[in-house]
Amino acid sequence: METFYQVTPAEQGHYRISSKMGVFMDLFVGKDYALLFDTGYGFGNLKEVVGGLTDLPLYIVNSHGHVDHTCGNYQFEETVYIHEQDMELCRVHTEEETRRGAVANARNMDDEHLGISGDVLPKDFQEERYLKGGAGNLAAVKEGDSFRLGGITLTVYEMKGHTPGSIGLFWEEEKILMVGDAMNPFLWLFMPEALTLDDYRRTLVKIWSMDFAHFYMSHSPKREKKEIMVDYMETARDLDYEQGVPFDNALAAGLEARICTRKGYEAQDMDKPGFASIVISKGHF
Image 1 (cartoon, rainbow, N blue to C red):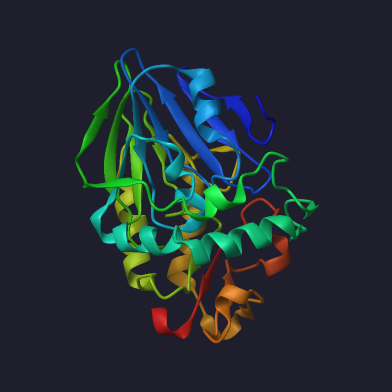
Image 2 (cartoon, helix red, strand yellow):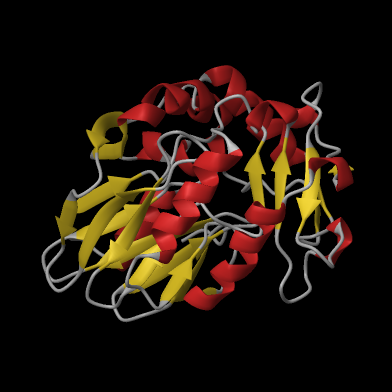
């Protein structure tokens, strides 16, 4: 099996799958069914990796429609569940033009935070097949829907903000929440599809009210305690756009996006405990 993906066992029946692109996917294996939460960029043979861990019937769920969470959908014949409000976003982010940009980025990675530079694509990467991959067999999922895997129950919760159709999965038995990109210490709230800061604040309040102990994010390997949500809530409450620093990223070109950090921190403090930030543009207040 190729080594493009790394598999890390987490809780019993739960595996985290990652690659050099810095995106984490989650595979849950129950007694009767398995569920894959997100499919990443899809550069490597994700289907083979999942098949090496389980041969159970598989559910696939996308946390939201962005390129780095949905472009592996095409490798699977199974239905891919996504919130209705992110379906069109998923189709755009998995079309050929967007995929071509993702391939170019993977060939010229330069991420100081991840410590990666150069070409990270697997040696057996099939570019033409990848470019034509499409969005997969999409079907709508909504808040309250549950996937019962046999000993593992995963329930859908809407977590609007980063995108209008962002969702999380709550692992009922273990009180663990999978939040995708809906909540993280470097939250993007500047792209055209993003909702407003008030929408994100409401989502944080909603998540805080839930009965969970730990959560996982899609761009971090760590299981986090619920209590660190206070850092994110303070950042959203006290956000001062005028004190933010410009976000130097091609995706933010012309959007006047700024990195607004938690009080007492600066943008370069990303690896320090307690860091939190929101990358926001003027149009999202």
